[in-house]
Amino acid sequence: MPRSMRPVHLCTHPNAMKGLTIIRDEKSRKRYVQIDVDLIEKDREAVEDYLDAILIEARKKEPSVPLADFERRLKKSKAK
Image 1 (cartoon, rainbow, N blue to C red):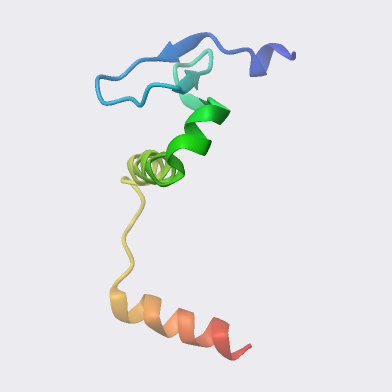
Image 2: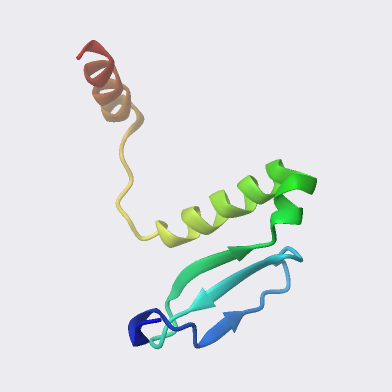
C-alpha cells in the first residue's frame, strides 16, 4: 500500500456505529470508512444515514445555495 494511503489513526467517536470505522491519514484528515459487511446486511438504512451525516459534516463549510437557485438548476438539468 502506498505510504499516502496507509491508515495511521482509527477514529473512535462516542456516537460511532459498531462495525463502522473512520480511518484518518497522516495529517489526521478523515479519509476512509471501513464498514463491516454484516452491519450493512443487518441495518443498511442506519449505515446510509450515518454516511449521510459524515458527508454533511464534511461539507458544512461549503457555501449554501438558495432554494430558488437550486430548483432553477434542477429544472434546467431535467430539461436536457
